[in-house]
Image 1 (cartoon, rainbow, N blue to C red):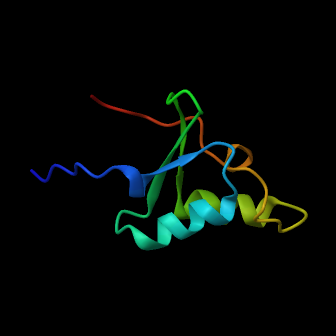
Image 2: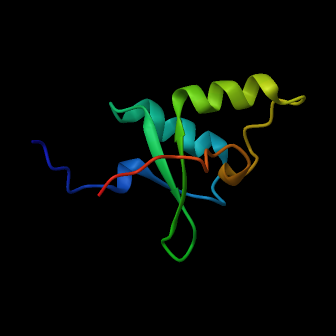
Length: 79
């Protein structure tokens, strides 16, 4: 089992720009980021596919919008 201790490369804030999430998705090998609120609560996840679907369904391509607009709130988790 691989335990990753540096989680910063997998986390974005919900008020960050979508372009920031895209950069993080491109740099980490898992192609996923976790969106957290300012208080640290997990709000949703964004995968490469989630962003593609959001971009295709948007009338206007604006990657300066907040991550909260594109995140997947219906995620399944296990702990």
